[in-house]
Amino acid sequence: MALSDIGAVRGTRDLTGGESLFERRARPAVDLSVIIPISERYDNVRKVYEDYKADLESTNCSYEIIYVLDGDYADVLTELRGLLDEGEHLKVIRFARSFGEATALTAGFANSDGPLLLTLPAYYQLEPGAIAEIVGQLSDHDMVIARRWPRTDSGFNRVQTRLFYTMEKLITGHEFRDLGCGVRGFRREVIDEVSVYGDQHRFLPLIAQRWGFDVAEIDFPQSAKDSYRRVYRPGVYVRRFLDLLTVFFLGKFTKKPLRFFGLVGTGVAFLGGIAMAWIVVQRLFFGMPLSERPALLMASLLMVLGVQIFSLGLIGELIIFTHARNLKEYAIEEIIN
Image (cartoon, rainbow, N blue to C red; front, side, top):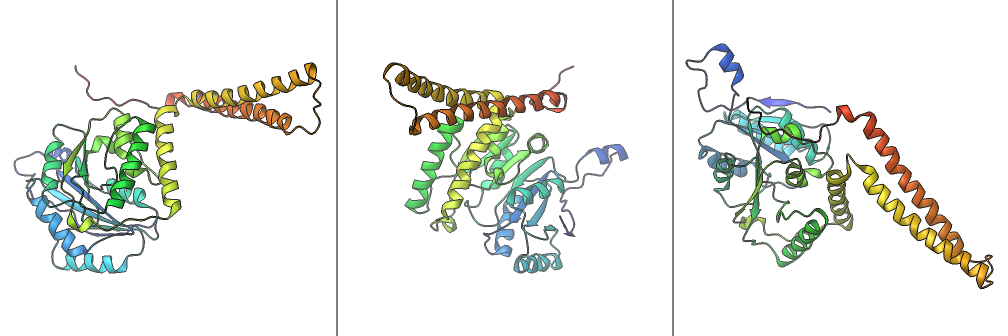
């Protein structure tokens, strides 16, 4: 992965006066690291930057702003270079090609310094003023995510959003209502414990809550500029559903794969066994021939498939057992004395 850094870290507060060398090294350079990924959708780069900067100034925190370009966005890079030439303090990370927004966020986290992290979309989702509230709430919560409410976008958007989150609640049992909003604040401990890949950055609150972190969802007015109708290709909806199933599986059965595969395999094999037993009863007591009976083949396949699915879970358990010492499935909040 080719990365090129441009610019420097912003620090608006003097942290060095009267401190020892050890204390200066121990304290972070900034209080807040802001990650802005650039992918398929973005608004006017300069205007968005200026609006975000105005909100960040109201937090009374020292901060850094990191842009991550997920691919070749020459126009965005030109705008960012212009801001740097004007004396703005930015850090820009540019990928050689597109690796996905989750990878862009991960690269931003790895190149940030603040104990508090804030992700912002490269386009308008909320009305101004939300950033200070989110940062302030991090004193009471490990992670704070914004919910766009009341919604000002089209009825079609609201219908598909409601359907998705109804499905999310049924599958995972959690009730987050706007995982699509990219305005999120969290402590660095969340990223240290939770890793995301693929498109799972959308489900970071679900994963973080599963690890025991305190996740809060707060309502903020939706920006009027975020009102266009969103219609995706069918494949996008399928991928979102599969990502949701992946998060559910990883949260429930990562350390106990036999519980999932064993249950499914046993159920499939049981259905095949019942069908096979009925076919045998028909042959022995009712004189029905076994030849030219597709049901016999289907019952046999179900039994074999059930055994194979069960075997997958058993192999998974063996792998987990051999690596159990290297696996961690807990997060320590505090050690006293």
